[in-house]
Amino acid sequence: MSIDPRVALQSLTTALEEHLIAASNRRGDGDPAVEAAFFAVSDAFEVYEDALYEAYNEVTPLQVFDDEEDEDDEARVDDDEDLEILED
Image (cartoon, rainbow, N blue to C red; front, side, top):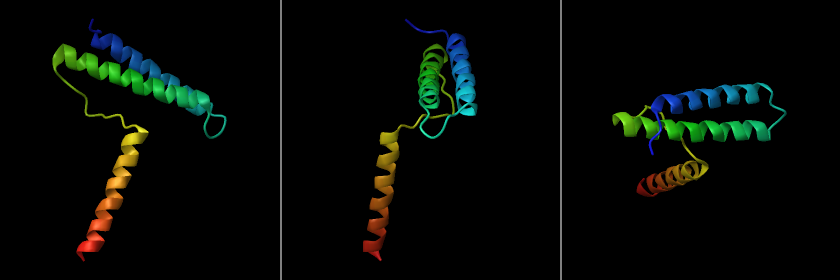
């Protein structure tokens, strides 16, 4: 069952608006409302991206990164730096 991209886009827009509201009402670092809104945006974006691709074979120029990917990227940078030191 595919989702209409317009419906998915509306859900993404709503999630973004809710994230803005949560961020503007933040009650300190690690506010659970902001974190929940953050993940809602991420989830809504992925649904939109999938719906857009299914309907039109198209994607956006945006990408969602998760913490695991960030840690892997940092590890690669450290490895590359180590290699450069060894090569000098």
